[in-house]
Image 1 (tube, rainbow, N blue to C red):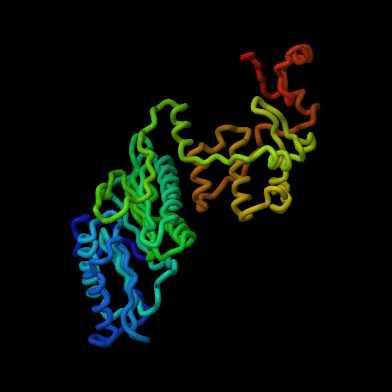
Image 2: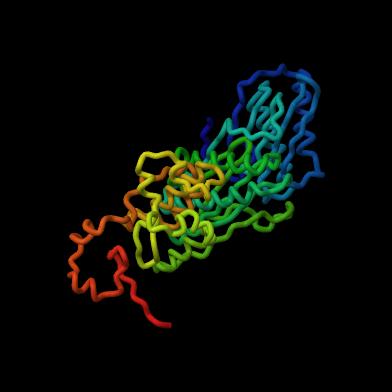
Length: 406
């Protein structure tokens, strides 16, 4: 692991990060040395590739050199090639006689090895760079918004093609805007790209938890975020990236904030037949209670009963990865806890669903839990007479619903 602090973007001669991988050495003026120089030169002098990604090899047998180069997707091809040349020269000079090395400047990354490094996701060595000038004031809110943004951008980048796998976007928090860009080497599969960015984001607590800007660089992917826009808006590099925009700061009113937070959340919708099957055709046996929004059925009692996931998941819903189903149930139970102060916000729910590194608290009792009638009555101060005369009481007598004609 290597740790580096940010340099000025204009400094393109010194390495921003590097690692001379200790996996062997070559002899000066050997065939491998000559092949390495030839390969790197052929990359930064190539004018046919304009998407900023190169995966070339040169040589034969044990003297074959493999190289992957990745430029930031928003810079011009000429700037990309200039960055590659400076990074290549600096890397060879700083890692003399190493058969494998990786390093980069602000706008590009260069790596080479005496083994094939194509079409595979590699997570080491890794680096982080951060802005150490100050910390954000609302650490929790900033971290949540940043992780939500990175999670959504990672999904978008993973759906790219063999030329590009990146996305950029922005998100407002506390009248600030977080700008972020994520990128994978395009030779990765969608799942490998997503996994790489997910693992990279897991390093944030170590490097830049309260930092207003930072980046994590893996050999196969990287991300960067800042509170000012750092990418080039109108680059002539190539096609525009997938862009996520959520830049309008929400007004201070709580209702508007809730609506703003929900814009990025995809709600789960189940058809009538699925719900009917899951509740045993709305059986009284599965009923937990009833409030202003309708009947609540069983999952919390079984969750706390020390039983296996198979006992919790209804057979009609038992499709897909078991861990994802269990996590969704866990998050759902957190959202219906009796103490509303313990319930997560929609922004937190979105972060929980998109980032598996976020640990989940144990859910407490839900707001509506079926109890025996004798155990409910002593808790209420309403007389029997008023209970009889008031048709607005819900069945569990914990909430009131008033009906108005339209």
